[in-house]
Image 1: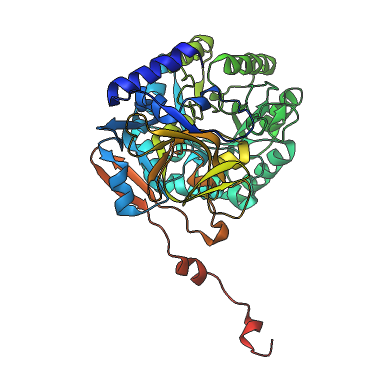
Image 2 (image 1 turned 45 degrees about the vertical axis):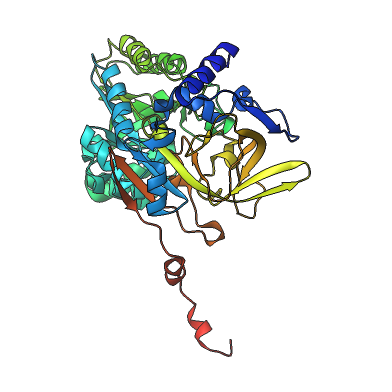
Amino acid sequence: MTTAIVAEAIAAAKARFGLTGARAAWQGPGPVTTHAHHDVPDHLLLAGNPERFGVRVVDGEVHVEGTSVAAIAEAVDTPCYVYGAAHVRRQFAGLRGALIGRRSLVCYAVKANSSQAILRLLAREGAGADIVSGGELARALAAGFAPSTIVFSGVGKRSDEIDAAITAQIRAIHAESIEEVDRIAARARALGVVAPVALRVNPDIDPDTHPYLATGLRETKFGISMGDAPALARRVIETPGLRLVGLTCHIGSQIMDAEPFLASLERMRALIGELGDAIDLDYLDLGGGLGIPYGVDEPRLDVDAFGAALVAATRDLDMDLLLEPGRYLVGNAGVLLTRVVGHKESGGKRFVIVDAAMNDLIRPALYEAYHAIVPATLPVADAPLVRSDVVGPVCECGDFFARDRLLPWPAVGDLLVILGAGAYGMTMASNYNTRPLAPEVLVSGERFDVTRPRRPVAELIAEERYPAWMADPAT
């Protein structure tokens, strides 16, 4: 981040909230982070442009749409996820609008956030669905996605999942290996139908992202190598029970421009040319991976430029263009609300302990991912800033949301807002330490509704069973 951008953001924050300065009250030791903006508190940068995170700041209070997060936390308790419907709609409309000029379908990657409310919202907006399991198929159908708009990705589909997809008559199953092609064919013949199949090809493109998020490299488990794809495509055509309908690829996540997509498109076009006119494809699917800014100073994807580049590069292809965005649509539509339960100082470091934990948002522990954290009530002018770790109560060293973060020192009971939690929060959550899953809340204007309630611990225990032999006191 440039000094000019930092200065501009801080100036905007000061003008809006009457802040006259900020001073560091204490600075603890710790490694230098890769985020230059760690030395500028998140709340100052957020104030200059809160809309990019799907939030608003009204009289110094953080709101999701027209509703204060403090009111939601008071009604629902913490931790809880809060999603703004308007942000999801805007992101989807912007991406679909950027693709005007060619036949296309935006298939939402259900794995990013599988809330039934979010799914139904997107289905009603006209999205398709990209699924990776039989469970997600059931969710997508229950939410109202038309089967003809659903594609089934994933490297390890069970036979019963393949049967469910064929029976539902989805648009296509994306096959990732020769073995899987044969298995789909066997299940289709057993069901007495012809199954639509697309081949997922690995274009060996480096998207320059986190190693765990780079799925398009040859050494990953995903897809079919470019060298093997032509022969496998012809095998699909010649196999009873199968119909080849498309080619697909997915190179990774958190991609912020069109260049990696254009690079993979170039290789996919070469494959299409090699297959020749004998193969008539319904669609080309370039996958998902569109990124969002997690830090408040990080760049945003220029969606209009992205769309224009893809439209221009595929103008001569007489087939549908599919994209599979997930976090781009929902990531910055959501926040995780959490309250401070305590403080600690140890080994020259200070800790802010909150009631959310890694089981609620595992991205920082799994990817060392950055999430901006701001007070629900923005601090007064000259509020002391303390460099501290924001951590949860789970008994793991990886249970943290921020390390060496400069933030206004919160009091016990203060409400904090963890931004960018709309994607891969709840979908990767767990009951670790017998912590109930946090509830989910959907906001529309000044209304909010709990779309998934918090389950009592008693229900978690009640769903378990003792083995029969434990009924005998002697055992």
